[in-house]
Structure formats: C-alpha cells, structure tokens
Length: 447
Ligand SMILES: Nc1ncnc2c1ncn2[C@@H]1O[C@H](COP(=O)(O)OP(=O)(O)OP(=O)(O)O)[C@@H](O)[C@H]1O
Image 1: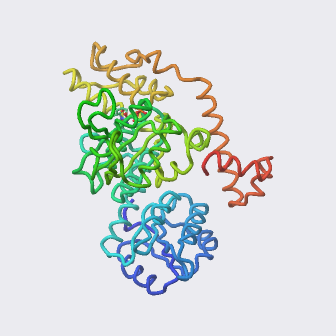
Image 2: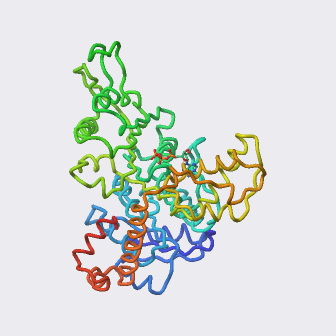
Image 3: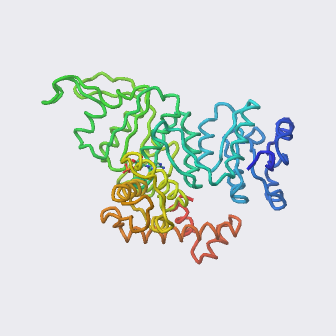
C-alpha cells in the first residue's frame, strides 16, 4: 500500500502533539484525523476505518505507568484487528515500549521525536500492509530467513524491533522452524554484531558439563582439567549468548543460570573469583509456553528473566505461501550445489507439498527438496519425484489431532469474543461455558 492512500488517526491528549502530527503528515497521506479522548474510540471506529493509529502511551500525564496506552492499544486491536498501532512513548520508557510490542503494537516512537523517524516508521508500516507477494528476507547475513506469510512477517517485525534493544529474547517454535536463524538475525541486527555470537545446546549438557561448559574452569579443578578453560559466558563477553533447548535443563541448572543472570558474573569451577560478563541473552525451546509454565519443571523467576520479549515462530504448515517460496529457494540452492537443473515444477509437485503436514518443518522441506533434486532424472519435477521419509513424515498423529482441535477451539473463542465486543460474560454464555472456564482457556492459549 502507498503512503498517499493511507488513512491515519492520531490520539493524544496534548493538542500541540495533534497539531504537530497533522502538520507533519497531512501532505503525505490521504486522510489524517486527530482525537483528544481515547474514550471516543468506539464511536470513531464505528464510522471510520483507519490503516494506522498513532497513539500516546501516557494520557493526562497523571498515570505514568503507560498502562493506559496499553489499555487503549488493546481496545483498538479489538475494534479493528487489521489496524496497525504506533505508540508514542517518553524517553526512558523502553521497557514499556517493548511490552507494547508484545501486546500487538507495530512500532514505537520516542519523544521528543525526529520528524524523519516518524515518516520512516509510518511509511514502513503502510508499505508492509500490501505487497503480499513480496519476498521478505530478514537481514541475517548469509543466513537469510525466507518467507512472505503474515506469520513470518510478524516474526521479522519483532526481530527488527527487538534486535537493537539488548532485551533478553525467548524464541519458541517446533523443531526445524528456524529458531537458530532468528537468533542469528537478532544478533546480526544488534549493536553487538561485531562481537561474538556463541551458541550452546544446553539441553544436551550433563550436569557436570553444564557448569564447566558455561562457566569454564581452572587448571586442577577436576581430574581432566589440565589447563584453564574459558566458559561460553566469557567467550560471548560483549556479544550474544544463545542457549538452545533451554526447556530441557534441570531445576538445579536453572538455579545456577538464574544466579549468573542476576549477578551478571560467573565463577569458573575451581576459582573463587567472580568475573563480570556482559552478554545479550537469547534462549530457544521447542516446548510450548504452556509447558514451560509448569512450575514443577521450570522456574517462573527464570522465565521472567529470559523472556523480556518472546518470539513465537509458527510451524511451516501454518505459514501458507511460504512452502512455495521455500521450495523454490531450496530447488535453486540444490540445483546449484549438485550442478543440475534449473528445475521447473508441475502443479502436482507443489500440491503434494502443500498437503503435507511437515512435522519437521523447514528442515524437513529442505531434505525433501534435496532428495528430489538428487534423484531427479529430468528437470521438470512432479509429485512422483517427492518422497517423504518415514522418520520425518511420521508425525505424532495424536499431537497433530490435538493441534487441530486446539486451533479450532482457539479460533472459535476469538470469533465469539470479537462478536461480543470483548464482553467475557456474553462470550462465555454463547460458548456454553462458565466465565472461569473461558478465562482458563484464554490463559491456556495466551490470549
Ligand atoms: N525461513 C527459512 N528460510 C530459509 N531456511 C530456513 C528457514 N527456516 C529454517 N530454515 C533452514 O531449516 C533448517 C532448520 O532451521 P533451524 O536450525 O534454524 O531450526 P530450529 O528451529 O533451530 O531447529 P531445532 O529446534 O531442531 O534446533 C536450517 O537448515 C535452516 O537454514
């Protein structure tokens, strides 16, 4: 979508801000409306549609917690889910701004703002609204993340917003969804990009290895410690530490990790000198957030610490056109690698792929395409050229069924709540469950 076609609403209780925004934007957009009272939102949205709302975080200057901004952000999202919201926030409210991104804001502008930054942010939001067929690649060096679906675009937006902030990030997603790529993209788009990026698969470490690997050791600390060795925390100093499979570490290991994150120092085994470390922490897991919230398995205080922002990477089967785009990408890649092709595909080839549930996600698609390229006898590929390996394509049937049931339930709840304009009592009645049962489900689905 072009900026000149956009309809924008600015909501701020400061008339000077409204005037300034109107002056700044009016020559760039189709329509600009301003509003002093967010309480009028319902009336405004019942008569109008806006592509973008620029919303102040702090009204009246009385409550400076920003909760009001977040409250109105949620109202806008309820009234018009397709409308993007950019929040205006005071300098020093970065934590709050990050929270607002979690709650669904598309971007934030810090006061006092620079006019170019406002135009840039607004232009970017509006531009993204269209171009559904455009190939978007997160800037991640050679490890580009390919995708164009709404779901992966949301991931790109979060990466772009979160990368420069130094906030701790928790990446959630099934195996093979691209968690590694996202972690690298965050690092490469951050201020720390020229410093080390260190990955540790913590889920695979035994309890003794966990300590020596992460915190290092001094010569003689244990039988095999023949010389001093730096731990991964120290190696990552100044850069980013990526802890993969964080959901699989024991409670004892969680306690050790928490202490280090709180004190920002590590003490190598066999030493009593604490060494300060400056790292940006990214963690990843293939567990669902609901599984991580089981306190008998994972400490709540550690979740809060590692999860300033979470990025959920949806499974490939929920990413629409990405299957086609990724297939093309891998076909070109392997054609080049094996000096074959260039390949064309018959309709049946993509149709068969689109029907497949991809329990192994992008990694599985990559193997399937590689196999097709290796085995192909001509350069036009059809469904018969696709073979799904027993290991990859034997999804846990039970799990897939559950997943579909859960999706249906979640979507029904969302529809009914939307229909009842957010009224929980009415929605619960319509769904035939108690209010408490509805709240439990909202909690379960993180709604
Ligand atoms: N969007 C994408 N674009 C291009 N390649 C991708 C994409 N997503 C994943 N891949 C490729 O798929 C493979 C698996 O990705 P990655 O290792 O990042 O997944 P993961 O979620 O970390 O997996 P695991 O949970 O098993 O560690 C890699 O080869 C990666 O390059």
